[in-house]
Image (cartoon, rainbow, N blue to C red):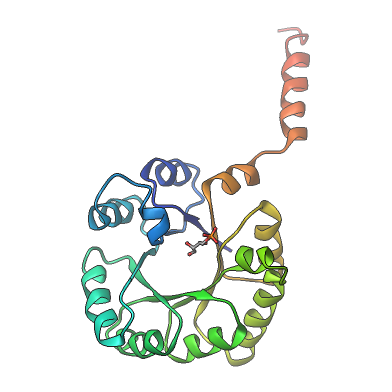
Length: 214
Ligand code: E4P
């Protein structure tokens, strides 16, 4: 399973890259708005920190505007994946961009039907937002199960990015289902590493080591 960091913060990305587990990065306008740097400079800097895909989101709404915006973003670095919200205009744009070899991450996916259409339109990735579904009392992980099953049935090459991850169990469940990727906020990535019994175990071993004859 690939792990992406869901962040536009260079320090966080650098830190997780140093752990040796970073396979890519996803950003969105909300994450980018927290950084004191221009959007393009930020994406360029992120792309230099990982060789994996870096999602940069288009904000245009019509296909004829999304397409040139996506081309501009794709020129920033070879590992840019353009993020496009799913919808009729997004599908049209995805088809065209896929034909040009530009990786599309179809985002804001909340149903299996949207994911199916995105895959058929040639999206390289789909991003179902599970946390936001859980927030409104729906079952985000059930959506991941549906999408993974559909993509396996028809051997779509589109990869499932489990997005809007809120806690470590989301990552574990996504891995059990066989989702290709989870994009994980920094705080959740830190929680994945830590366990209180590991900390207690290290402390005890160190205490006992001090009693060992040397
Ligand atoms: C994914 O690509 C999105 O950036 C992100 O996962 C959205 O998460 P949120 O629901 O916590 O904003």
